Length: 432
Ligand SMILES: NC(=O)c1ccc[n+]([C@@H]2O[C@H](COP(=O)([O-])OP(=O)(O)OC[C@H]3O[C@@H](n4cnc5c(N)ncnc54)[C@H](O)[C@@H]3O)[C@@H](O)[C@H]2O)c1
Image 1: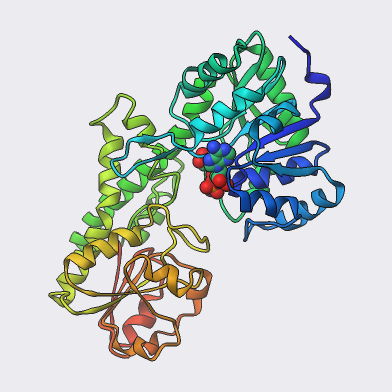
Image 2: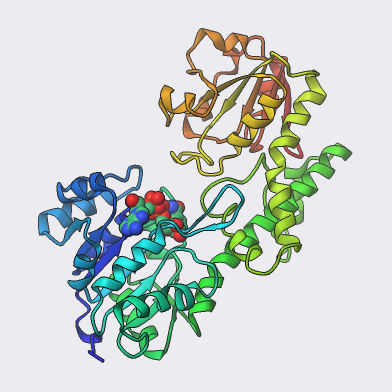
């Protein structure tokens, strides 16, 4: 097989979304020639025009500009072409779940087929997309062999390295988090490690197989989901007993063996509520992981019941949800708890209003709620406020504007209870 360790100099990044584009820009500033590939023509044109289509990522715009000036980053709709020119191929096209929580390969399968058409002897392919355990080898490695007629481990190298970064601080996390790397064999691991040493320069954790690396990311997400569910369950008990859960958590976590997470109105995003299904759907249907998913998804229902308990029927009540995004300061709605809140409030025939400074009026309307700005006169008609995502802009929220509001449901336990109660409104947190 062609030895490429000495001159890993060109990289194809397949999928130029939030993560892929950031990776491409970082690699293009570390001495690599980067060929990005995407199916979205607007994205490809934007990259070739030297623009940065991913917003709110500190440092990214500058890296993209440098890469453009140095001509080290270009993009194409033609994945095989990008792959042909590259020593290393990074795959970062999503795998999601559908409405029934079945694993959805509709984006990555065609990407892998295109990659297979472009590889040559000696190419190193690294999957970074979060995957069900075994897929790098059994689903994608085999598909590449079938199409390219090349053999993994003999003609091309194969590795897996999970992407673990957090939106809004991707570049910082890329430098700080250890990179977990697993290879098909010793040589694949050695090459992938050499690549990341040069491309990221961070600490490496070399694990013994592709599957270990794949499962380490899913296990991380399961851990967080299950522990949030535990916090939610404890919070419900605390509510029932009139105990303050945040105070309990601070007290319990004061020794080194307790790591209680924080309760809340639900878990959203494209990681924690999705990747547990890569585990549940692969042979474990009734364990603690599926229970945790259920507990977390029912927190929005629980929140609505808490409001009903306090103010009675919600029929025709004006309820304003703060935050459409799944979490603070990101413009992303995947599995946002607000979607579940809207569903439950609609069942109760409430009038649903929604504010999110990161979305425009049309975007908000498309989720079936009335958009309400924080300087609108109608704020005085609001009966109940629900805080779902604690965006920066809500830190200075003036509760005086909500002159007829009876209750504030603080879904993230972050608001000032005393201030709210001093204005004659009932304050309720989750377990608080
Ligand atoms: N976003 C995060 O915070 C995050 C964090 C950790 C890990 N990840 C991992 O990164 C993956 C990608 O996340 P993202 O946020 O960049 O997704 P994204 O939705 O922002 O981007 C995906 C990109 O893939 C492109 N694409 C779709 N089908 C394609 C194909 N066949 N060929 C080429 N390109 C194709 C899309 O056009 C899009 O530009 C996730 O699925 C997850 O595994 C994401």
